[in-house]
Amino acid sequence: MRKLVLIVMIFALASLRGFGAETALPDPQGSSLSTMTAVELEKQGDALRANRDFVEAIRYYEAAAKKDPRNSMLYNKMGMLEWRRDNKAGAEFDFQKAVKINSKNADALNNIGALAYTTKNYGKAVKYYKKALALDETNATYHSNLGTAWFDQKKIDRAMAEYARAIELDPEVFLKSNQPGSIARVLTSEDRAKYEFMLSKVYAQRGDMERCLLWLTKAKEDGYTKIAEVYKDADFAKVRQDPRLALIVPPPAAAGY
Image (cartoon, rainbow, N blue to C red; front, side, top):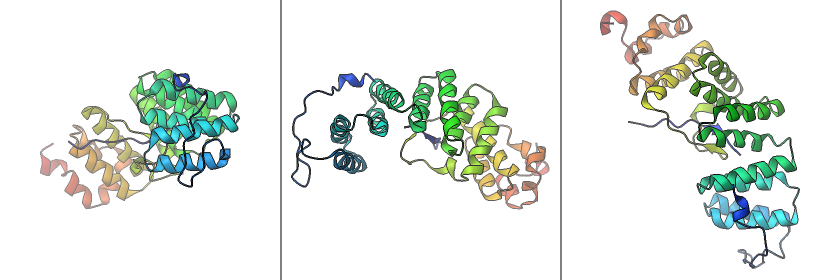
C-alpha cells in the first residue's frame, strides 16, 4: 500500500563529534579549511549537502562555526544533517545550540518540536511549534506540523484549524515531500486514511475541488471506512455537484450504503 509522507518543516550529543583541532581538508579549488572564510566554508558545506555527502558537509559547517560562532543557522544546518544521519542526539544538541545563540531562530525551534514529535513527546512538540509560530505565523510548514501533533493527540478540531491555515498560506504544503528541512512520517493505515479524508474536507471547505478530490481518492485507496460521509457532510455540499465524485465514491443508492 502506498505510504503517505507528511511533510513537516524541521530545522545531540553533538559534542561527540567534537569541535577540537581539525585536519585540513582540501576543497575542490585546492584551498584548505583553515584558509577559507566562514562564508566560503558554509557555501561549500551547502554544496556537499546538495550532493548528499553529509559527513563532509558537517565538517565544513563545523569549520565555519569556529570562525563564525554566533551564526545560529550553521548549527541548524548541522542539526538537519545529523538528523539525516539518524543521530538524533547530535541533532537535538545542534538545534538547542542554534536557539541558545539566537532565541528567535524559528526554524530551529520548529525542528526541536519535530524531533520531539518523532519520540511521541507531543506536549514538547506542540510547545516548540507554538514558539516557532509566535515568531513566524505565516510559515505553512509550522502550521502543518502543529496540526499533525494535534491530530496524533486526537484533537481533531485543532488539527483542522491548523491544516486550514497551512493550506491558506500554501495550498501545496501537503504535497511537498522533499523540501529541505522536512521530515517524513508514515501514519498507521487507519490514521493515514482518516488524515487524508480530513485534508479532503479542508480543501472542500475552501472550494478547491481538484485537491479535495485528490485527497479523497487517497483516502479511498487507503481504506477509509466512512468515505460515504461525503454525501452527508455539509462541508462537501459543493463537491457533490461535481460528477467526478461519483467515480471516486459511488452515490449511496449505487453503492448500497
